[in-house]
Image (tube, rainbow, N blue to C red):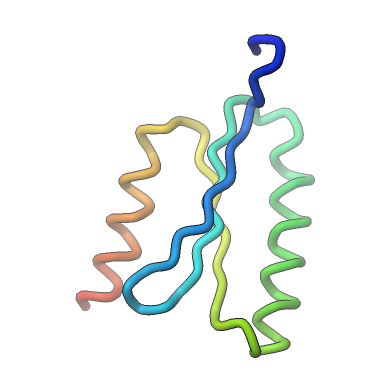
Length: 79
């Protein structure tokens, strides 16, 4: 890890369907489980509330996986 450079990046992607995807790109899996559980708790709470649309969370460990995740959600919409 380069000093001053984060080992993760989070994006909020609003898909054509209105679904909101929190997409986290992690460089190191060392704390991924803890962060993923926290994110999923947040997503579940927001979805239970229902006032903010439907949210999902995905985590990838390499930037090349981002397009695979986005393509997967696009394919679900097309089906």
